[in-house]
Length: 184
Image (cartoon, rainbow, N blue to C red; front, side, top):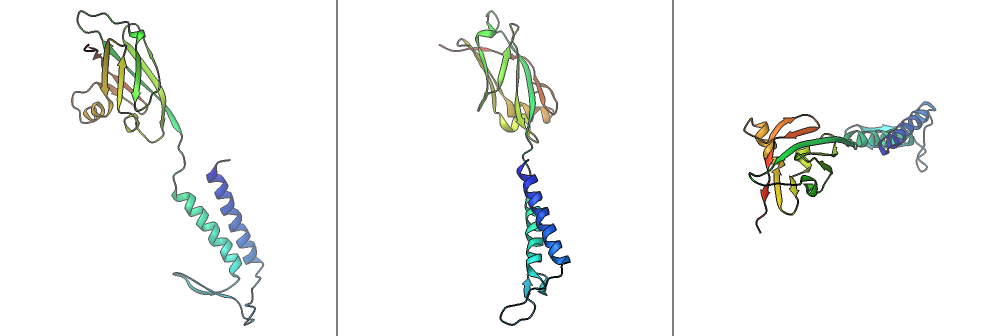
């Protein structure tokens, strides 16, 4: 049972206990004056009543309002990012010898002999891939490639030339990016 459901159950229990006490019409008398207890509530005024029952109702209302106002953990959605890298003119690259990484931290990735790649991993529901990650990096010791995720998405949204070929609710497909030889 999730934390939200537990608090809603407690709020419901407080409501029920408060209403049961109200239905029993038990009036509490002040021990010194022997008159019905009087309480003052902000914005409501003074009430002569059985305040323990009202306390239960108010606690239940507070708990329910508190949980209602807080967004619950929405979980993760599985995303897939695809694209490819191109061999620089006159070069040969064994793509499988390299690794792909997402910055600031990574997902699982796979590369094919033709330079295509696929990355899969979780992104919190309600967020975009670009809200979490900044760069896609490929390196194999001799060659590297870099995709600036946020810049490319901003260009795509603005209908400017971008490396993003298509974007859905949980996928991105990037156009081929030319790998660069690492200067030695």
